[in-house]
Length: 222
Length: 222
Image (cartoon, rainbow over all chains, first blue to last red; front, side):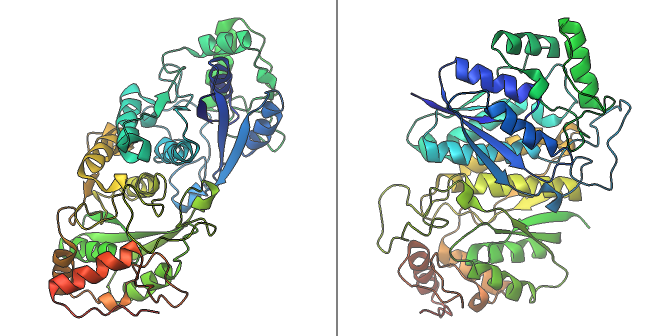
């Protein structure tokens, strides 16, 4: 059985991505990060989600990204915006996907995995530079050069099954695969019980997705 | 004054790289990693080295790479080889340069730095895939796409001043710039006082470099 590493934040997109990787027949190794995120409730969500999946190995890497700073998601002194902004929002965490993918790459190398799944999306997203298709293509080139596998002519493929889907399409795909979205936490400012603020960028995109998909929104709001 | 982030392990190459970045006129921000390396004495070396440089900011990021495993440098159950091997040696840490460069990239983004310096070398090196010029070129492409600066059309340039130099040439360049190599620790199995084993791959390359440069080797061996 071929192996895949799946970046699993506990949000709607990453859980759908895990379900897609399972359905594709991979032995799944989920990777989460305890990175000093203010919405740490997403890590509790990960535990509830994994209880719904058979045979998924899980690792949580501890890496406090507030050692670098520069984001409302890791710096408690910067508020999460409650209205849409133009440009790259302050919730952007500098180089976060590059950091997470590089650690996923290291684990994939140790596991001799064939694929890394990441639930980036370039349609209903917050405008982060490291969610764009050209960024993903560049990381794929790097991954082939960075590893033992690459030197030996093997490939660790970066899989981004959500990249061209709308939020509504992602939700519909997940429901087909049996994902229970009531367990997921997307909110950037979720409270300790995982209840969503309803007003941050991530909450707005999620709520619009459920509305567009004509699916009852199971999110619990504060 | 333009800013640069310099990856600083405390070894011969990275200290020479810092001296080169200083000489190029950058305001230097040195970045070290406490990553569970068995040769943790290199972090003490970093402190002694920085005392020799004026006005270098320093950050140590804590990230235990034994959370991923797969290397003699982080797994105490795998011995550091004392004889040369063919292929990629077990001292290779999966995706280490990708992980370190991604965190350097995040810090560079927060600092609005123009450059990241890394002391990789593709001549007298251990055959690690992530020291090759084609790997560095791929990370440069990624860096331009991954960041706010990239989206705004600015560049964070990856500088690799040692990549084509022999170990002897690196040593001669460092001595011109006033580097005190007695303070540096290169050994993969250095003891707590920073004394070198003399037989690991890194020690062999270093000793041969001093011999070829016809410079007295200041390394303290166990």
